[in-house]
Length: 219
Image 1 (tube, rainbow, N blue to C red):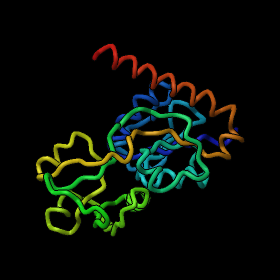
Image 2: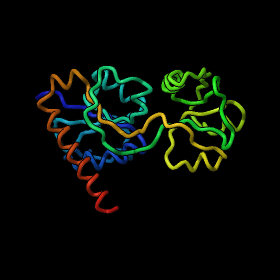
Image 3: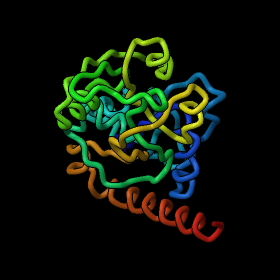
Image 4: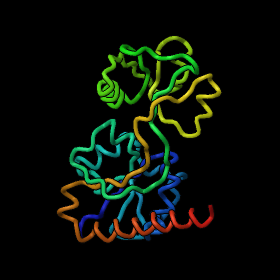
């Protein structure tokens, strides 16, 4: 029997929204992912297994061939690079925006800024493209606190509803990228396992389209 296909899933919100799409494509774990301490899961398809890992690790697992397919946010792909990956499908889930933000009514400096973010590479590229000299301060959470404590002039972060910014006296400013969750495939796997991957990707695409049509009908 050939080696099983491995799909790397991102933990958290993305996982909850990915599982119904996989189910619609005929792929379901044979046990609860949230209640088990296992790291590798069997599915209803004998030749497909799932692993659930940190979102930032998904591209690495797929790039290096430990997983054939991965599910990751576009923000992770932009930050960590997508070398060695195909990106055949936008799953259209966990949609949000990657933006700059700062204290409401307080204009940022025009040529130099201190910027707090966990998206260091994205921020460097963005401010360089704008001709702004930016000192990037890497933080892992509570970004909104940085401008309030005068640690930074601006932040670069994911914005969903904007309520957290508003609650802390801040406002979104410039849009860097619209973010959604993408299916990524190892390039070597796409070549070697094309006959197995193509129908799987097609079923997922159909599940995404059916979800979109259902949302339009209920709107």
